[in-house]
Length: 328
Picture 1 (cartoon, rainbow, N blue to C red):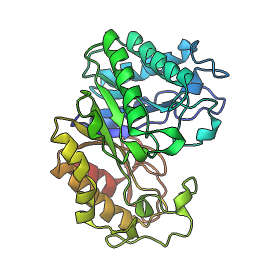
Picture 2 (picture 1 turned 90 degrees about the vertical axis):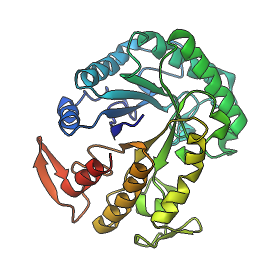
Picture 3 (picture 1 turned 60 degrees about the vertical axis):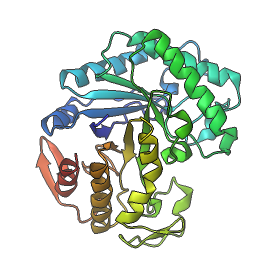
């Protein structure tokens, strides 16, 4: 998983609309700039109605088929992720009827869905497609999740996938919103996916969907204090030490999401991202930016002071693009 790329939100949040079409021009951009990884976070409500988990509208999966085919044509690896799964989502979890961590029906539905994908894509080579089982499990104790029941569900799901497609790469996201390493699952044979958002006071400054944004001062970097730490490059190195320890147990680690919201001052964002990406390079960690086009991305993110350049048909933050390319 020494792969580098972006998250795309074509099936990200269901609001009653059809999935967004695959942006072939964006995939061309990735290929031309030598990025080789795409993560597709999805919402199961695109293919499920009224919590009828076991009768998905599989015509919706044709959108995933098209995305996978387009990625394969360009030599880009696609990682299929459940951002909203039966019984859990890190955003607006109250929309769920059931609880993935405590309810058998949600756990059965979760396994069933991944078995469905495993059968659909059983003949796709492992270097073309991975399964990222669940986006950002909650903090320990939240919604009834424990390290033990999380590990039980992940092991059960991985085993079900491997009975159908034994070589499929499986990815599991860190606990606590992707931030906590999982030594208890080091022997699962899965890739562990971390996050690149710390400190949140820099990456999510004025991000109104995050409760922690209230009252934060305009961030500086280095020097912002957050969660009892003064953040600089050394603090970033310390932040990934538990992940390095899991890696030493034989685990591949990938940073499945990172980015900086467009309300953080541009000079602060670039200094922080330069340190974050250099730590990834130093530790040979692949990464996927959240997102490509949008408030965290490299295309038209809207951060005042950014230096845009028209490139392959997109208005691209040139300084940010150069940081990404320099740290692969």
